[in-house]
Amino acid sequence: QVTEPVIEAAKRAEADASRVVVLPGGKDFKEVTVSGVDNIVEAYEAGNGAGYVITSTAKGYGGKMTVMTSFDADGNIKQLKVTEDAETQGIGSNVSKGKGYWANYAGKPASKELVLGVDVDAYATATISSRALNSAVNSAINAYNAIP
Image (cartoon, rainbow, N blue to C red; front, side, top):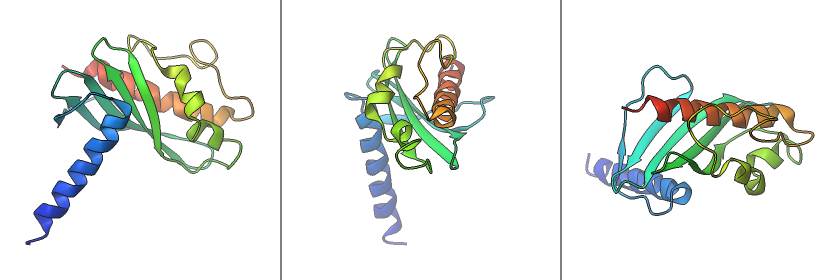
């Protein structure tokens, strides 16, 4: 009973630190409710108006892929971060751990779902992992657009 509040505060601080990584300048994150969108783990709004961070999932080649997607105040994708994956090392991991590949999403508007091969390129030899990442990002886009 004594340590529970301390543990919860530490977990919140760690989660907020992860959000700041994908949304630099964001602080005072508050959870927002998103309804009617599948595959959403959580959604947070930066209290200072910097934007939103939405965590979503999709099925990759090796299992579940969990992706944090940040949106800036103008409604554009700021950054991505894959926080969990089981993709094949050296193939699918180029997508799940590839910060260079994630940069393909930066600056894309959240006004519509992104089409793989049109709006962003698939990673050669890792099509299933590319689709999973794109699907998770599209779930985040749909959630962003569902926030009142």
